[in-house]
Image 1 (cartoon, rainbow, N blue to C red):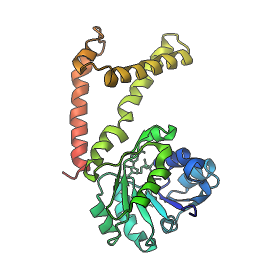
Image 2 (image 1 turned 90 degrees about the horizontal axis):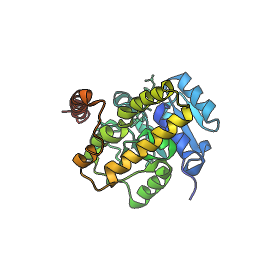
Image 3 (image 1 turned 45 degrees about the vertical axis):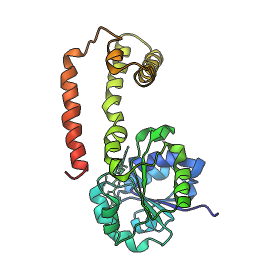
Image 4 (image 1 turned 30 degrees about the horizontal axis):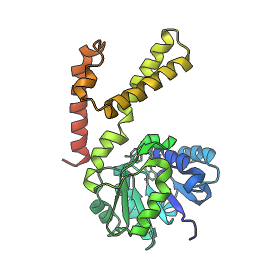
Length: 259
Ligand SMILES: NC(=O)c1ccc[n+]([C@@H]2O[C@H](COP(=O)([O-])OP(=O)(O)OC[C@H]3O[C@@H](n4cnc5c(N)ncnc54)[C@H](OP(=O)(O)O)[C@@H]3O)[C@@H](O)[C@H]2O)c1
């Protein structure tokens, strides 16, 4: 079977992550075409991936066999009607955005329904992403297997029901942003306490991995896990932090679901 050509409409963060992670494993860079409205985004991408074709013309990227739509929902609404007549009968369009359902995407594409939706997450850059996928019924089992094999180097790519994708956007796609700044704060503290950066990072990494294993795999209840350490220096801020999760993330979920 000849190698499929791949288009990316939008050359921002997630496209960079895909190109880096899939790289020579399943996506030879010379088969990829990326379009973006920002010349600086395209030149940055070209410098990082010299074999990729870059263009300001979204229709060029849309003329490939598999087309990833790596745009935010408002841009998707304006771009899809512009590219719909470039899509061949064999094309598969993969949207990486929350909010826009198969029904809305198909409406914007004049009824074209060879669609996949995916909610990627950034740890895909080190092949450790959790990237749920939903397939429109018009995608055959063989095409589904082909997409899964293309995306395998990103990490875990479970097939899920379409209506759950926004929940995964909150839990998995945006999840790292709830934690990374806190780890960086601890890293700075390690430095201020006189540890070398390498010693700080070794301690933090081991602590985080061990905490994950204890939380998910110790067989202890949450109350038992929480009680393992009696001294909790951030206890005074805990209620505020829980409240921030509940208020901000509940409101965001409602927005993503159009409620
Ligand atoms: N990054 C992640 O970890 C992640 C995770 C899950 C889902 N996603 C989804 O992936 C999609 C893209 O996210 P991203 O993080 O890659 O965003 P991003 O870094 O902002 O990249 C989007 C790119 O598309 C460009 N663009 C805007 N309008 C365009 C148009 N009409 N034609 C061509 N290019 C256009 C943007 O330019 P401007 O800056 O000028 O707008 C920007 O360079 C979103 O739907 C997001 O929800 C991302």
